[in-house]
Amino acid sequence: MKLRPFELTLVVVFGLMMVLSLILLRMYQPEPEIGQVALGGPVSVWGTLPADSINEVLRGLAVTQEAYKKVTYRYISPESFDTVFINALADGSAPDLILIPHESIVKHRTRLEVLPYENFPKRDFRNIYVDGAEIFALSDGITAYPIAVDPLMLYWNRNLLAQENFISAPTTWEDLVANKVPALTKRTPNRTLTQSAVALGEYSNVRNAFAIISLLAIQGGSALVTETGNFYQVKLDEGQDSGVAGRPLTTAITFYTNFNTVANTLYSWDRSQPLDREQFLAERLAFYFGFGSEARELEGRNPNLNFDIAQVPQGQTATLSRTYGVFYGLAVPRLARNKQGAYLVRQDLSSAANAKLIVEANNLAPVHRSLLAAGSNDMYGRIIYEAVPSARGWLNPDRARTDELFTQMLDDIRANRTTIPSAVRDTIIRLEQVYR
Image (cartoon, rainbow, N blue to C red):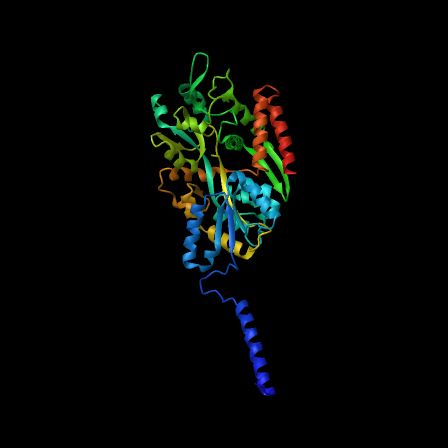
């Protein structure tokens, strides 16, 4: 049938309108309902905390926020995270958000978005979070939103202490050295260890050696590491007050190595021993320096172990309590594909309510002042919370490389290849190179 010009025109017009309608429908994105967030697409989150706790929070958010059904979390072990993340950046498959410990911040700093203080004033940051969380607040802005902290604690075997008529853990290093170590360390006549009071002095068989050495340096008043932009100054062996004499890291290493020196009266550990945590579980170690998050795991691995948790010892004359802590924060990679969504998800996950869920699920402690003030009814949490105000970390350039340098330092001292001051000085020089 032959169409008349008028009919042909109508067919063409309606055809074009249909094509245009299909195009508009394909491009149309409805405005979010009131109370709904607009993430702008899927958001991928990677982190070093177990997936169950994060996914539980995301499922809770998805109940009221439809967009959260497109937010995914991938757990990557702390040992593998740096390599996996860097490779992902290289091949263009970077995540939109990462949840990492502060010990990785320096290594990835140039790969992360920094939030200027104009957008998040440092005054507000300090009002919200505890002092130690300022490890994420650098000279040019905020690198990550703090979520939690895992403070170093002192675990003690109640049975072993009771046998020597001790009813509590030592609160000072002086008490540990003068009373607990002599009574709780058992040796054969040829000085072979059969029971140890404390595992200090070595690196390879002391699970948290890095944290313990850092703790001792921090308690000694170390200025740690300062930064301006991307320039770092290693002041581990310098005091915070230039007018105060002393070498904090040298003093820390001197004290630390007393415990693996056979001729020393404090000798209670050596490199022939198994990993300290295993000895503690086997009830052949009276004190174990472990992070607060380890309490439930220890309890699960040996239900018959009669242990408790306490604050780490302080110096008898110390006016400020200090412990080492690992702080966890949410950061946005510069190569994130959905930065808009990443910022919104970070805001939600780091809120006090959601951070509380993450903290409790991972046996960590909160960094929000409001959560800390509310306290904890958990048997271990109550003690761990008390350590949070005194927890501090430092800007480590590369944790794996630092472990190597500290191991070398202790090996050189043990083998008498150098003196303690020289070993510390050489370690700092090598550490400075890692920052460059």
